[in-house]
Amino acid sequence: MYLKLVILVMFLLTARVPQVFAQAASAQTSSKQPPAKSQTYTREGISVEFGLTPISSEGQTVELMAGTEARVRFKILDVNAGKTLGNLRPAAWIDRRDSGQSIDPRECREKIQSFLQPGFNKRPTVDLNVYFILALNHEPNISVIDPLSGFGGSKLYNLISLRGSGQDWVMSADKKRLYVSLPSVNEVAVIDIQTWKVIANLDAGVRPMRVALQHDGRYLWVGNDSPEEKGNGVTVIDTVTLKVAAQIITGAGHHEIGFTEDDSLAFVTNKQDGTLSAIDIRRLVRVTNIKVGLLPGAIAFSSLGKAVYVANEGDGTIAVLDDWGREIQARMKARPGLGAVRMTPDGRFGLVVNKATNAIYVFDVASNRITHAVPIGSGADQVTFTREFAYVRSADKEFVTMIKLADLGKEAAVSRFPAGQKAPQQSPAESLADAIVAAPENGAVLVANPADKMIYFYTEGMAAPMGSFQNYRRDPKALLVLDRSLRETAPGEYTTTVRVTEAGNYDVAFLLDSPRVVNCFTMTVTENPGLPKPPRVAIRVEPLLKETTALVGESYNLRFKVTDSNSHQPKPNIEDLGVLVFLAPGIWQERQWARHVGGGFYEINFVPPQTGVYYVYFQCPSLGVQFNQIIPLTLEATKK
Image 1 (cartoon, rainbow, N blue to C red):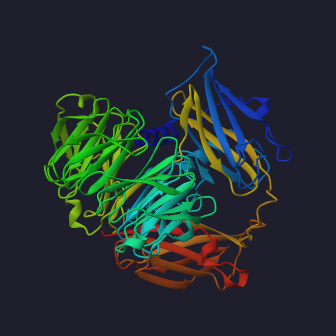
Image 2: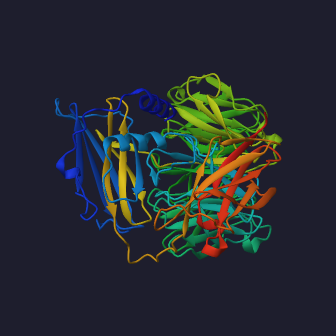
Image 3: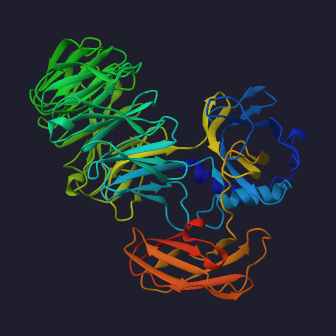
């Protein structure tokens, strides 16, 4: 994706505007007529077909209305050869237009070029190329980082405040919700990913720690590490009603959670008791409690072997149980100190970390035997996979160890790279969630280093990370990736799912760098009678930025244009146009009344006291405009 962005910018800045644009008649859609089922654009033997399929919550096709989801599809063909074109990297954006007229080729190119600029001035309604990095911080918040473009000089796209520091999290399969355990307040926060807002804080029992979603997403399982026996077990939350469906006592100690492939059973470890509980999910009752070893601390279910694997920290054994959790079929002997256990993507091998012996044990699912131990250095505590490698994080070293998966059947060689300057454990941040996650780019990972307050981007084959992302003075202890970009789901077909929240006419801007194709398709979103109409904001604010980076200790002039939302005409002489500037996460702020300098243009000046990310909010009490109704501007202040 980084390469894609660079190529697109180079193409738009250097390529001449295509002189010939031939668009099929089906793409000619007026504002008074609904768009065609599909639109096709052909140039120099390359055909791009754009399709938009509205989808209801039940999965049935419905009218394209505001607030509903739709499947966006681009099919790319070589007309002369009569075949689809795969392995391409198309880019696309959806942008609302105020007029009912379709834009011309020059306006289309200018619109795309503006989207590729890392500024605040022009942002599309929906960007179909982005992915976000979510960082669960030691502080009570989540950073949402846009690694590809960012805006206003900062890549911090959003900051989600929580009632307490998160311990673990899980994202729903449809990427609509994020669930975060908050042990300090005995709650689970439910976050709507579309709006980046906390929509509920649910009572989740005493000390909710590990969270896990069933494969079908129906129930969220929360491990309660209560110091008292009566509260020690799991809380089961119905994700539809967002209410507690059951609280089940399982046993004492920390709990790890796993599921059978068909979601018929849930398995819960009870570390202090040395037992494994099996719970009938349909009835939400415990059916077995079996002794598995000393201090069971990790669990994995193998769909290939139809077995449950429990790693026991205290006695160094790996218990293998049948998929009913009723009988121990085998017991693999390793060394005390076992931690996380993960199955490889193909399911053939299991990897178990051992902090005490500084090794990873590899076991074969077919034989239930440990094949060998791989030395990995001290402090290893987590394992993450890409297609080619296993990545092992060490808490007491800045290095990440890599093991090639193709070598797991033999003595595997290891390599490592530095993910920062400091050992992660130098930060007080601790989490059950993964600090290393696979990036959308093939053969790449993202690594959180809370001690450095940084996130590192590493590509396989390199000796060190290719780059890094600031977390703006916060300690990132776990990461997730939300990928909203176009993906090739069939040969020559590139799709994603979107939701447009407002009715209106939209341009669907499409760009392909090689072969070169630039075009703007059209779409119309109708009013949704089932949605409450949001209050219309009386004014629009358009920042006019010469510099998106301010200097610490020096006056920064921010000028912006204010227009009437209905007439789109300048709005001069507003006397109560308030501006709030604050340094994230709120440690400094300043409020001013904007000065009108003529023609609907206003300005303020402020002096950033220190480096960091600054948010700029706008309000106008006389027009009923509150601070939260206009998208804030984001600026970054740096030293000279």
